[in-house]
Image 1 (tube, rainbow, N blue to C red):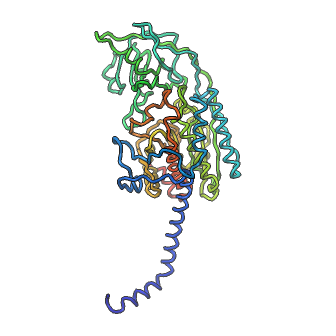
Image 2 (image 1 turned 90 degrees about the vertical axis):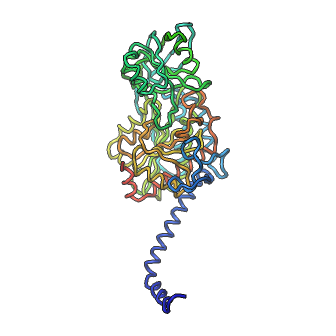
Image 3 (image 1 turned 90 degrees about the horizontal axis):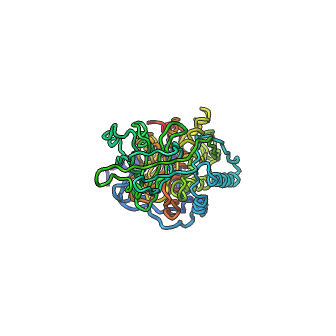
Length: 500
């Protein structure tokens, strides 16, 4: 019952506190309405992709599914497009795959950029925004007329593909030294024995903590005096692995990607004798030219949140996962948010790059060519690269600790199954934004899960059948949530994202 007079005192206290309580209640109501509006926006992108179910984890989302094989937190594995989803999302993905591998400088890349420019123009027209812009960018290009690898013991030609931009040779013959995985320790142990040899190493699953990048291995081989470099895909039936040499027109050694059969043929013989091989690469350096496409959807102020994805790819397959997925999702996010950006504190820039597969050259040179004020307008970059092919999504947050916390908070508020990885992985265009101090992340599928379809990137197997429509829908919803929160965030939050 309480003591006498308690109810009367409570009533008087309530009346005296009413103005402050009403203000607090109004602020709480506005916060709830803002959160609901953001959720309606991101749900429109993917038609309300269902939330994952599983163990509770507030840091990574309201409901976190169980991890698979120690991999990243998994998003829902959806078998098809969702009701109300952006129907153009899958159509755009298939259209990009239809241009083939889209190697920078090829007819397929040029046609894909023309197509993408048209898609950006459609978005601009729909909301009365300024037309998209095509920025010409130069890079160290390269043409290859022929590449051959011959097992000198049998005279048999082995399957191979030249690494993009590799050094040419009329023919180099040497013994092959097999360094297995090609970890820096393997090079250290081999020491002086590397000089004058063709080095053979293995391709690794590229999206994992502890991964040693192809160009790191090639650099070790070159510095220790190797006369050639071979990198083999470890999976049978995948075919030769592609990739960039990273030479950028500078010094280098002939470098080829090969398959498991070629690696087996060049393995040391049972009697301990090393194999011998000949590498021929008929290629030349040229002045490469491509375009960076941007569409700016203005907000109240001059600042921008960037959504980026690279259009170019590799010579084999359709470059479907890498990176038709990212471009299709970037376009879907832009379509879904375009009508509402004008009401936000900052605008949205869609940035479709090329020559990313050439050691990130395209975006690096584009960013370097901007003045300081233009770069300063870009407050956050959300880079979409290989966002399909697996049901898990991870944000690589490039050592921006405040950005990592921001991503986790958005995931919790939106119920997203999204993991983060803080240490820098300079494996896509986000690294170039970060190098200029712009907070940047890469959204990627299949991180730390080598059993996914992403193991087939850089091979002829990277085709559209490796991707499920629901994976793209989930990526679109996740990217839209991150972008929507950044567009609407207060200035203190956005300034803080640059903290490392």
